[in-house]
Length: 139
Image (cartoon, rainbow, N blue to C red):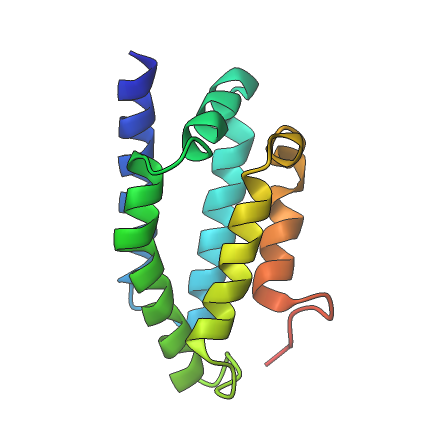
């Protein structure tokens, strides 16, 4: 039963992700919506269920990783390209470098001692991911 809830939760998160990415709002608004959605989701997850999700995610090739590789990563590349076209993402950064950074973070987060303590830091980590340590530029 927990695995079915996990599949449902993953699919729901993917649907929300897709809705944001296909919306007609500018790149910064999409980033804000992604950060808000992830932060709100993180606040709503029960600690035991979160631990189950992370154990499932770190157990090798699984449903969540398959979805991430097949659906989320290509959509992130589309989002980065949109950000570059709209002047929000440095066009000199290759998508490969951006994906390398995200992959390195994902691999680090998969370590048990990390995923057990990262939940309260979700919002800050998302801000660093999208804005760096310098912060968001005002436009």
